[in-house]
Image (cartoon, one colour):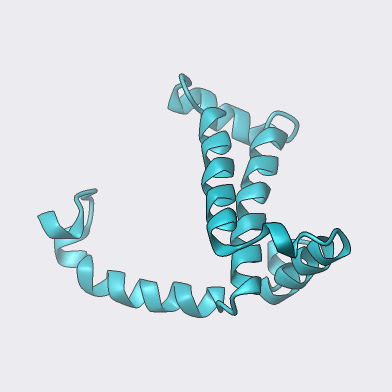
Length: 121
């Protein structure tokens, strides 16, 4: 499976099948899944703590050294896909709608090259 040939729908189905086989619905309420996503995101962040941008880039460029980051990224995605699957959230649609909101919040003319929040532009 690769990003180029796998849909979000397929990933949601795979995550659902994995969890159903293990009878995990009882542990996967929305709060639990959100907590899981944040916890796994913190574990991803911990891999980069106290490291320079150059060190991080080198790690991510190395196919072997990047495996822990791939695993943590996959863990974050697992919880997000599970939340979406359990509660009927169309991830692609949600992303498109949020991008439309951000297009108005961050117009190119005022946002290009700036990392300020839209309330500060």
